[in-house]
Length: 193
Image: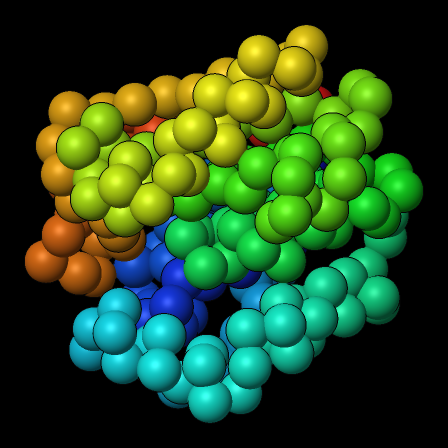
């Protein structure tokens, strides 16, 4: 059994993100779902990003990292898109991480946007669609490939398609087949960390 801290994407803690957390719970894992938007959800990525921009990206990321303060250190940090920011920061900087799961997004581990090098012994999975204009077009896939090249236990999984939030069952971008495969890979990961 793993204990997971899961961060939502820019549209908020949607029913689809909650359903994903429930599926992990149903497999016997403890899952904490951080709600960084205080119950707000948004109809589009753009609306959610505007809200994040109003609060401040750095402030919102730090709000996410503070969620871990009251939780044990031996966590798997997981995030959907925007939620990868606090998840990746915690996985890389908070001692005791058992693993990391990044969906639809990834940050580099070197250069200006990096939190520093990847910590030894922390496995990671990164999931995205091969033609997602955000994951591919904005460079997240390059960051993911850098992690896979430099980290011993790192895997990048690419799925056919061009949707960004494909693993959120409550959104039109949902891809049931890709989500089923992603979920099986995540559950296998959680069973071994």
